[in-house]
Each structure stands twice: as C-alpha cells, then as structure tokens.
Image 1 (cartoon, rainbow, N blue to C red):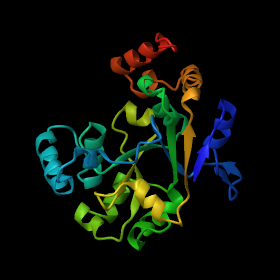
Image 2 (cartoon, rainbow, N blue to C red):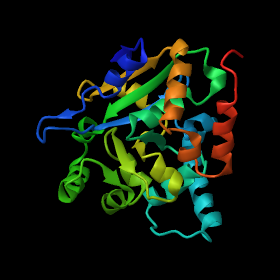
Image 3 (tube, rainbow, N blue to C red):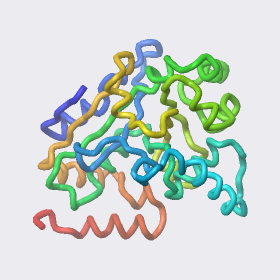
Length: 260
C-alpha cells in the first residue's frame, strides 16, 4: 500500500499507522522502517549492488572477511554475528538495514540535500506478519523466547549456516544485530535477511498477500521542513553517527542554504 502525505502533521499520523496493540492497550509498533532519499529506489542489498556473479561470490566474501578480521574481538562465531559485523562496517552482504524508529527512517529519507528535488520514501514492514509464516524451527525459537523479533544469537541457535537457511522455502527474517557500538544502539537498528540472495524484498512483498506493509511517499517540497524539525528534535548525524564525521555532516547542513 502506498500512502501520500501532504504536510508535517499528516506525516505524523501516517508514521504511526497501524501501531495500536489491542491486546495490551498500548501504542506498540510491530513495524520495521527504512527511509530512502528517492521513492524510485528499490530495496536492493549491498550484495546485489555489487553486481557480477554476486550470489556465487557471497561465500568467498564472507570467508575472507572472517579470515582477515579475526584479530578483532568476536563474541559469537555464528554466521549471523559475522554478517552483522560485516554489514555494519560496509562489506556487501545480503542483509538490509532497518530501524524500529520511524523518525530515524525519516532522517535517512531527508539526510541527502542533493536529493531535495525528488520525493523520498519510508518503507514500513510488519515483522510479526512476516514471521508468522516462518518454518517451524524458527517460529519455535521465537515462541521459546517469547519474542516477536530475533537476535543474531537466537538465529544462530536455530540455523547454523546460510546453506541451511537457503534450503527453506523463500522467507524473510528480521533480527536485531549485536550492540557493536553506539551507532547501532542510537539508530535503533535491525536487519532483514532473505534466503534468496538474488531477490529484493520489495519484489517479495509484492508477491505476498499475508504480510502487512506500506510505503509513505515524502513530497520533495516537504523535505526542508521535515529536516529542520528533525534537527530541532535532535534526530541528527551528531547523534546517529557519533564522532567527528557525524558532527561535520550535521554542521554542514545546519549552515547550508535552502535556496541553493
């Protein structure tokens, strides 16, 4: 479902679409959010964007990452922990970055000032509805933990390799990465992973009638207002990317002209 917004106040309502939990009478979202600067962007993983015979290259990329990075402190030897670290540091993987926070997704939809001439988008996927159709071994893991979302450790206890994961009928899993640093924590991050490295999640969603999801289209003419109000609310690179690089990105926008 595609949702158009016309104003900041309209956007606030749409960001929290379908987040009331009748069972506990609380506003508790079961959605993962991903913000992009252009509505034309699809949900390609960095592995797909690598090009070439990327699905065959995946095992070689992971093997060499493990081999050359082993001097780093690795708390867990599961494939999901390794993939989380690799994705976090920019290696092409089949993981895709999401956040639990609609405002952080909104930040990423409006962070690039070079894209203020095009409409942005926030993808929202209900991970409960995604996980409801998982194979028994994965649903049993969730049930045992009493959780609607996986951790890397939980996935590792159920599936030990990508080869085993790829044997299932086509599925998507959302999981929280380890709290490797402040960036992951502050971005309220989670990952999605699909057991078809060659397929994008937006294609998968379009084929499913039993998964709740929607897209919020951010009009280009609304981006500066959104951006200024997010900055005032402290949803900025200074917080989401702790360190001098994030600070410089925030300051650059703060002192940029909106009439360029």
